[in-house]
Amino acid sequence: MNDIKLLKGRVEPWEQLQKDVADMETLYELGMEEGDQGVEDELRELYEKANAEYEHQSILNLLSDEVDKNDCFLSVHAGAGGTEACDWTFMLSRMYQRWAERHGYALEVLSEEEAEGGLKSINMRISGDYVYGYTKGEAGVHRLVRISPFDANARRHTSFASVYVFPVLDDSIEVKIDPKDLRVDTFRAGGKGGQHVNKTESAVRFTHIPTGIVVQCESERSQLMNRATAMSILRSRLYEYYKEQQEKENSKFAGEKKAISFGSQIRSYVFQPYTMVKDLRTRYSVGNIQAVMDGEIDGFLDAYLSAKWKGLPLDSADEDEGDDA
Image (cartoon, rainbow, N blue to C red; front, side):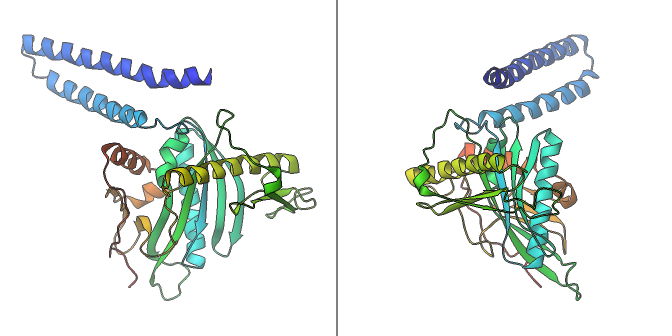
């Protein structure tokens, strides 16, 4: 039933678009016959609406990889910048949460590590149709330039956070994990706690010895549920890892893993001396930075997918804009 729903969502909009184009042609012919110049404004409005729908459906057609339709695990980690970077990690996590809310996607925080000023890291699961396909281009280093609220001298600071995106795998994709290759650690969950969560070792950490991949989950009160979630994350990480090994493309699913510092960013968010968010791969930019931080990032997602479809180079480039004073 889920597959049928997805297929209908891909076919029916194109059928409706064909009807809309036919209606515009009919309206145009009637206007020409009657010499009604007032039809022009209505036609222009209908055309712009149909063209926007065409662009949206064309982007959807780009999501054809086997895991594009799946949910995703999205994690944000603080990089260079100290306290400022931890605050930036919190701001980025909030941006993705707002984006998920705008689209009606379900979001669950699986684990987070608090730090002075914000978050050192956070792991989330976002659930909805084609979530991974939309968000896979977010993987990489994100750069913030602003006057730091933590600096008494009100100087501009540059800080970094790294975003990783992995697909949530369903049962149709098999990833073999030998129990002998796993080291399992249990510990008490952190956070504000309660009557139960901090009193038992409910949190679970898996270490996959051959690859060195470490995942953990502490969001549930039950150790069994945390085990299941952690295993799901590990399967996704291993899928991404083996896919990279097979195709020798480090940016295939999680993006190229560069140092979380200068010269490796994919996008810059500048608050001072001007406001602009610019993707250094697609050159797509937005001046309303507050809207972006409130989750309006679809322009960046669509620009990335469109550039991939057109075969344009997507390497991030260094730039001088917004460097420290």
